[in-house]
Length: 216
Image 1 (tube, one colour):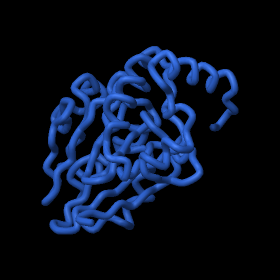
Image 2: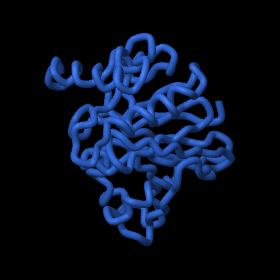
Image 3: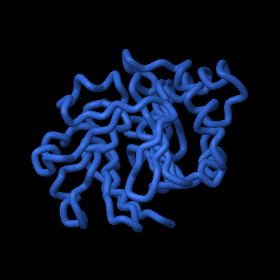
Image 4: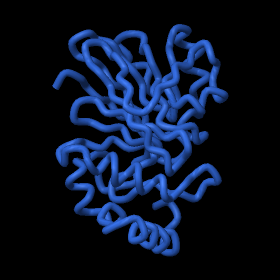
C-alpha cells in the first residue's frame, strides 16, 4: 500500500483519531481531533498538513485548538456548513465527491448526512474513514436534533454499501469486535446493515434504540 494508518484511541468516548502518511511523499494528515495532541506527537515524522473532520460533534473536534496552535499552517477540511466552528483562514470546505490531493495520493469525499448534518466520509484507495456514520457492527445513531434517519439510510445504503466489499472501515469510535474490518464482513455481523428497504431500516433502528445497552 502507498500509505500507512496509525490509530489512536481515547478522547471522550472510545474515540478514534488517525494519523495517515503518504509513504511516497512523507506527507501526513490527521482524521478528527478527538485525541490529545501529546498522544500523537511522538509519531509525527513531519508537520501534518491537514485535519479532516468527519463531523462537528464535540468529541470529534475536542482538541482542535491545540493542533492549530502547534501547527500554524495546518488546514482544516470539512463540510461547508461546519465553517462557523473554525477559524475561517484555516478552513477549506469540501463538497460531496470532491478530491483532496494528499502527497502523491488522492482522498475522495463522500457527503453522508444522517448521524449529523455535516457528516463526511473520506475514501483513500480501499480504506474509508466513516466517523460516526458506520461503526463495526452497527450504524451511527440518529437521535440528535441535527440528525435525520431518512438521510442516514440514504447515506449508508445508497453510498457506502455500494463501495467494493473489500473496502476497510475505520470508524470514529472503537465500539466493535475489531477496530477495523471490511465492509463485506461488517454487513455480515450487523443487523442494521441488512435492511431490505428504508422502512425496514427504521424499524431495525427503533428496535436497536429500545434495547440499546449504555456504552454500546
